[in-house]
Amino acid sequence: CVAVLVPLITGSIGVLRGTGWLAQEPVPTDLDSHFRYLSGIFLAAGIAFASCIPAIERKGARFRLLGCLVVAGGLARLVSALSVGMPSTGHAAGLVMELGVVPLLMLWQARIARRS
Image (cartoon, helix red, strand yellow):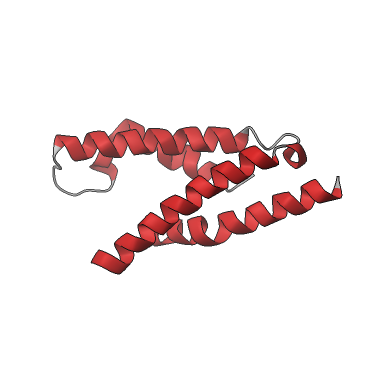
């Protein structure tokens, strides 16, 4: 339940504040636009994850799809880390969530589903 707060909070901040909460200097408008677009997708994913909480044992397909989207984003973030260097602490924590915590949550959900 706590993990779902990450995309809800950071997605909302990204939509409302754009790159301003991360960048110290003005960024090109196209970059801000793209950042807010991706933040909107992240917020929607958080809402979709939250919709899995009631009766999570029956929401396996939705949970796996959302989890795969997050892992794909984590893999893209890993490409960035390998190409241009490790990001700041917050983004590195995101990488841990995307490639560590979310796959573990997917395994947990599958276990819950098998038990019921």
